[in-house]
Image (cartoon, rainbow, N blue to C red; front, side, top):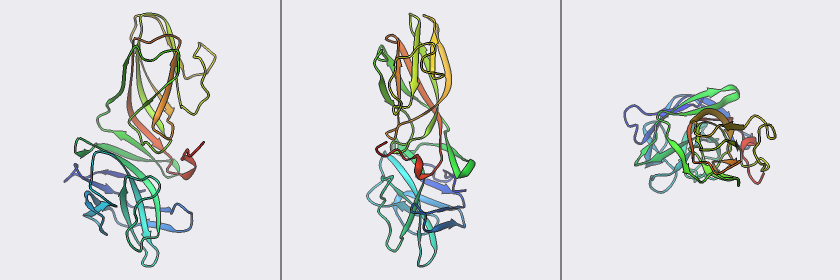
Length: 248
């Protein structure tokens, strides 16, 4: 459970959170959301549905993290929205929390998406209108580069991306997680994430790649590539603490 969606009445600011349950981040307290919630990102937090959601400050165009929170003295479970992926400003008397999701706000509105539960309580987050995140001319070269794509900036996730490459000459390109040891791409030297093509031909493909904990992917080519483009379709996140890539 605990999937979430853009609200139908106020998609600009509100999110609907489905019922479900999870352990808190310390593994000490089970939290059950027994009734669906609608929370308002443009209002300060208040308990209950159709109530404020933001932990502190005013809403802006940023990445925001969704928390499930509970107060053990009464058993009330609610949700909190924060700029922080590690330490939200908790309401009074709420003593347990767990990170359950992420949203992006741009142009004065929450960017639209769909979420789906995956095996083991994970989540697949898919953009309703995917955008081009990388569009480079003569910039992808024989030196590794990293580029941000449209995923959380403080989590390592598995991104589903579309890639486009065109170059006048033949080429090989390796696209991978920045945590992977750097290596020159070749026809067989670095495995299945190496792609190649002939000169003057448009190449497009879909692939999955793990991001760093700063929301980036890495790429390196055998030549300077004329055109290199990446669009993010979706990502999956296990919603488990072991996927947080802190100092590793």
